[in-house]
Length: 299
Image (cartoon, rainbow, N blue to C red; front, side, top):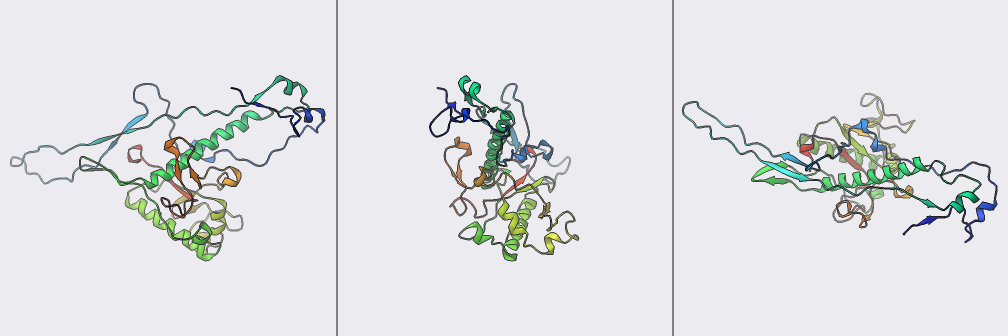
C-alpha cells in the first residue's frame, strides 16, 4: 500500500499551500550526514558479495607456545591450529522514498522534490552510522571467545564510571574533564594490553562531552602535548592517542546517530539498551570508542 505525501496540506486542506505564492526559497534546519561514512578514515570495510559465503570469514585462534626441540631426539608432532567462523548476516536494503501525486505537483508553486536526492542520501547515511555505532557498542560488551582451548579474541573493552547520570559522572568542570581523561586513558591501556594498534583509534562523542573537555587543563591544551588542540576554537583533535571525530549528528535531539536509548524496534542484531546507567552498559555510554583492527581480530 502506498503512503502518499501531501506537501501542500495545511489545516486539513490538502491544497491550501498551493494557493499561495512563495519567494522561491526553501529552508531546512541544519542536518548532517553520517560523517563516519568518509572511507578515508578506514573505519569501514566495503565488500561487494559475489559468490559463496562472502558474508562469512575466518578468525585465527592464538597458537601454542613455542617448544624446545632437540633434533634427532625429539619428535616434531605438530601443534593444534584452530580457526573460527564468523557469519555475517546481510541486512535488507535501506531505502528513503516518498510518493507525491501529480495533482500535488501540478498545483505546487515550489518544487517539493528540490534537493530530495541529497536529503535522502543523508538519511541513509545516518541509519548506517547509527547501526555501526550500535555494533561498536555491542562489540565492546562481547565476552572473550575460545575454541578448542585456544583464545580467538579476548572480548571487547569498555570503561565504566559510577554516577546517577552522564552530567553527574562528567560535570562541566575541571573534575568532569579529568574524569573523562582518566577513563579515556584507562580505555587506551586496555587496548594496548590487547595489542590493538595505536593507529586507527577514534572517539565519537557528543557536544556535551566536548563542552566538558573545555574545562581541561594543560594536559589537553598545552602545545607541549598536542599542538592541534585549541581551546579558543573549541578544537580537540587528539587525546590519549585517540583521534577525536566531529560531534555533529550525535544527539537524539537532532535525530543523531549516537545510541543513547533502549533500542527495541531495530533488527535483533541492532537492539540493546544504551541508556546511560542501564544495567548492561557503562554510564559513559553517550560517547563511543572506535578502534580499527585487522578483520581477524574483530569480535
